[in-house]
Image 1 (cartoon, rainbow, N blue to C red):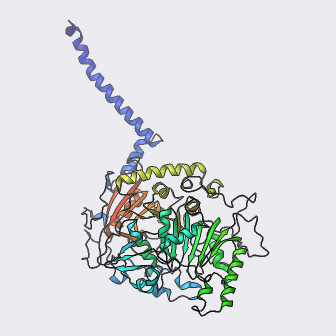
Image 2 (tube, rainbow, N blue to C red; image 1 turned 45 degrees about the vertical axis):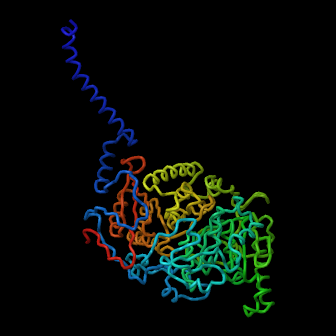
Length: 616
């Protein structure tokens, strides 16, 4: 009976139910698109993104092989992706440093070390080819072993092993260099020397996090500070002590080619907790104290200046220097007078070492007369002439207040609100936006690690963020296994002071020019919106060639940018012998921003010049 009376009704309901379900599904789908777009125009947005990504070949977020294997990973490229195949440079350019080349340098004056400063080639003289690693090049030792050993084939220069043989800078053993941790002024080793400094400077307390090493040699001081959780920015000129900075970076120590000459240092004011000169041979007493005044500019209130070696040890060595006692005594007296003018208090002097501390503010500073800098922006220093003037302290309300703001001890300092942001000194950055930026970069870095499984390990020790912003990437990645060079482009908002207040290091730079480093000195390059920033400033090709120059064979690249920009980058990268992939944003394919990931292939001098498919 039931089937007789209810059968036709059930047959009628079935197609109606199906239609209702289909209708509900369609309605939910449209509502979902509307919500995703945030504007009620989901179909139009989806169509726009589809058109933008039609040719980008977006790969799913899968783990890539970034292990060192010295084999080429075959990739299938289309003819549309290759616009130019870059040839290999001649072998003589294996250590080419475009803005510090000897032939160009010798055309400039010797006084004030002008010839050792940056002198970049004009556009029509730029080297547009791929600089290959020397034959026998091997992936550097992992940190911390790299601190003490480097392969000879990677930096084949024995000059320092002879010239500095008695000073324990570097020794040659078999096919490797050994770095015993010695230095001209610390024959008992860097550790013992740092222990002496620590009797005065609160090293290890968290108060000292950033340091500047002027005339660093092979940067053993900075190398041994790393294990004490202190980041030292080391620099030395490219001079007859060949490959000092190259050795430092090969060891895994932060360093750049640089000199204290006639141009301001490329760092913001109040950056470093400590500055150091160990027989750096900078004429501190000359130029009306200009070099000490420049150190004072970059030294944080309450920071320390350490001087060891000449001229402090003149009583022992004045005859070796062919100088009289009176002349040496007068030089040291001038240094003492300039230190007093700068409101530095001497805390220690014993043997070859003296330590001063900069006042925390200008309230207690009693200057009879001084040339105070008139510039309103002490951080505007790119290619700016250095002046013999004193950078004034920021104003304070009382004598106990730290000028510019007091910093927390590291590591709390890494995510605490930096004083420059709290005091509204960075346009467009508030306390709230700073905290949101931190959350965002933690999310980004977590996503990166899903694509590059070894990120955060010693495999990628020397890392550069080419458009660092307020340091969010470096802070999210922070680990004793690595360090990040935070580059703030000169055409971007000036945020480098914030980077230093977080306990990170970095430098100003213009990416239309070569970076002040040797080839093959970084394991990983990261950049957020860099190519969008420079798209009307200089050629993408030049920036990518420079990235290839400083990147180690089998090093990695991570770029975040708009899909159209990254498609242009990928076309150029195809001619660089990079293995590339374009990944969706963490929030899905509808987000126009994409992530470009690449690995530089292992190619050395003598390898047959590799061809790129469909060369034009």
